Image (cartoon, rainbow, N blue to C red; front, side):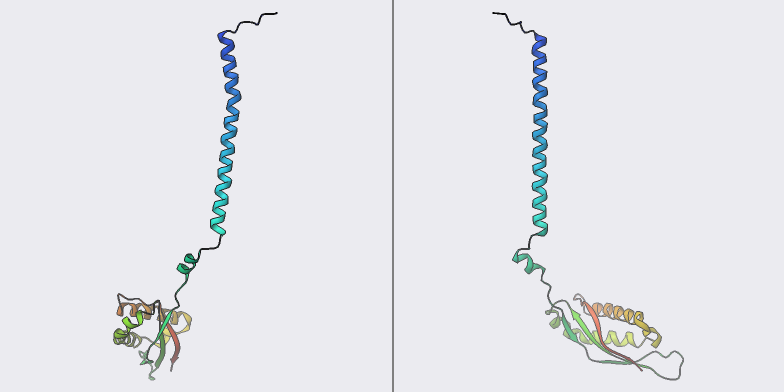
Length: 167
């Protein structure tokens, strides 16, 4: 029988390095596989949450309450005279849009303030202030602002026009 050569410290070191090299790629491979599984699983979970149908309680939370409308009395005012000899009048039918039906009871006692704000502002207007859609938009925004000041701390959503006549 032939004798096997004796192992030296250098041979042991070389075997350890080779073993370490052979284990290193398998650890990297395992870590990359684990990371891939986590990415795919996370993507799947995110897609499920993004595209899945909402639960019934989420649907109830997203339901928008219908708006409530309050009719105001017709407003008839004479417009500011711009030097002409003929007096011009403005007749407006206005509806207030409220976000909550419970606000109607809180706003009704304040209607004299609202009507006063309308009368004083509308009497300052000239017929040229109401020209075109831009003029009506400015009028709507200003009336909304004045109503919100009159009914504070409550707040209305919008002032809506049912009818506007300049004569």
